[in-house]
Length: 441
Image (cartoon, rainbow, N blue to C red; front, side, top):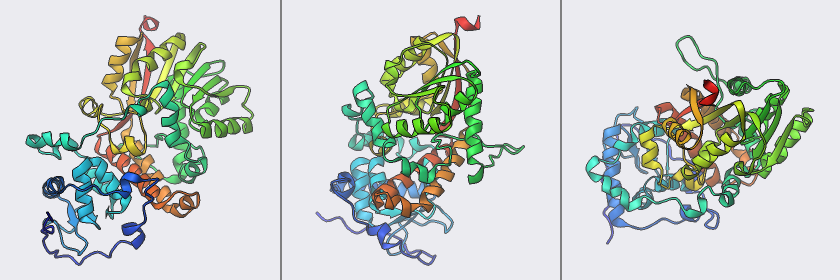
């Protein structure tokens, strides 16, 4: 049965120029992007998705523009815009797999937004209210469970890390600053608390973040430091420059090679060692354990072993400083067994924790306790803005590295989606201090 055409309303504002042909109709490699190339068919689910889209547009004040310039529902001219190029494909994707389909529809070029972050910020505000309370059963139609092969076991973890961090050091160098730091910076703040962020200040802001974490862990001359999650080596370099001896662990071969080279070039190879090693296999005793935005990749079933490992190698009187992306506890619980677009295409196997979950895990499984916390979510929003703008500006060099249009749209959506999460407060980033109970007596 053929569905009738979408009922729309004429716009009172002149239609916007059509998106470039590449944006709206770019080719999708079915071998590389099978679920983006394939449009699922399900008329009933598509009809449900259409009703939901109309409701969201009205309730959230969205301007949903059709290919002919008409509007799905009446909306003011200054409302955030979701511009549909292929409405039927969009509705069938969303009807089949919900937010995964929403993301795949963007990857395929079914829709665009002149202000992607602005649109996603509206959608990320109170996301639990998008589907009406009485219709939550609809989640069963599209919610998937994370696949077993992405669970963060020792065997799977390297493959999960490889999926993201071994794409290409050259790719990351195109949009990161010269410190090659891929985590939230800590910018200066104006007297009213406004974050002051600019590209030329990003390296200093990254060093400010790293130095604050090292201070939290009391890293100084002679400190024995374990870093879980090397990145490209900037924290190890800063710690070694303080006179510490550093062992840094990574599962990314690309990061391993570049971090080792950067450390050697700085003349600090006698103080900082990078190992290709799973955190569970680490041995030794350390005065300080530091980890920046690595716990998100561990996975909830493995949080106990992660913290038990830290507790096992921490010397008496030692300190642990962790930087972690966090979310509210109730949202973490609600999403903890849900396969999301981010897990499918960006960070397989992970889960963003809540501070409460970290408190509970350490209390049940270790002698460690969270004794200090500093949140700075707005700083991450600005960090992501700078990365996103840089990534978008460098689309041609990204393509020259062999990354196709679907990949570039995937990462544009990932960076914009993450930025929106921090702007709404749905996500936060925390620097946490953990110490042992007996050390506080």
